[in-house]
Length: 426
Image (cartoon, rainbow, N blue to C red; front, side, top):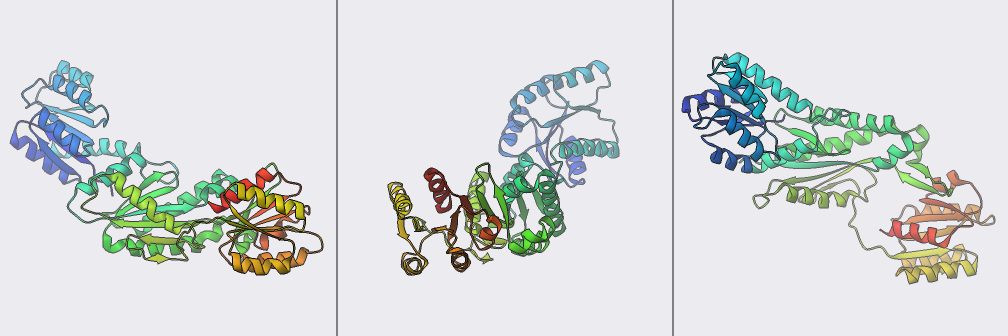
């Protein structure tokens, strides 16, 4: 649920109290100010979306609204003027000055609340993402700012769909939108009335909830996402646990299936800026990147899934029977600051692999060594290592199913394979 903040500006106490109660009865927050300087001070420190301005102020109502509109240009709150005047010219002048609505003081409580709800509905509906039905980034950031000011404890969950951009490229916009709609429905099913959920980016979400519920929600969402993942892939893709992405050079990359990554942190008294919270969440969620299933991490570093500590990766092992090519690859790698070892056959490879512990392995798939090299790939794919297969044979699917992360056809440009090595190391 998103609560708007309303600032009532009036010089008559009974007016302020009356409208404050009416606003709060609608489940919204209301504050009171007596003059422009007091109002601007509140607007600068609070996320005010509505201004209710009474003509009981000392200045002329239209002039006051004109000044307010100029001073709140960046935040653009909705302004509702309330006046005892029934003169048409006063109404027109006030609306011309920048008011969004003009109400007479004789208006009933019920009508005032209905009119306010209509403005609130338009405000919320204009901020809704058309695909998911969730609120957009601007409202999400306002919600975080409001939670920082409140005295209550909160937990913040950054929810990110890992590898969804690749899924979008390979499966198209309709499938992409279906993933977002399904995830938003799952998230909504977990929320209590006081929770907030909104977009931070197109496929990143922020959930604000009670700290007691945060880990339960994260655990449920990661579990639920992995259990509906098969709905978004073909049976072959889901069984193989990867998709294939091609480019114009006929290189084939193995892409992981989507996973849900969640970072959770609690409100900290030392964090007074929403950007600090977002930076903290973005740093935490990096710990989930290497997980093979959906995973969550909380600020005391308790993990679900196979999340490993990220270490610097800088070693390449090359299995290439062409001695000239293998030496060339080794030399170019070392010029780029990458440690490289070479071997000409499978027997020597296994010894060097164990001692060297490479991060990337390049395997040439020759006709004689076909089965041996496929079995080798299956064996080392269980380790935390990226496998590049180079071959003049176009058995791409067989190669990728064996555990390779990239198929690159021969002959290839040295610069291409070096760029892929760098990408996998990073």
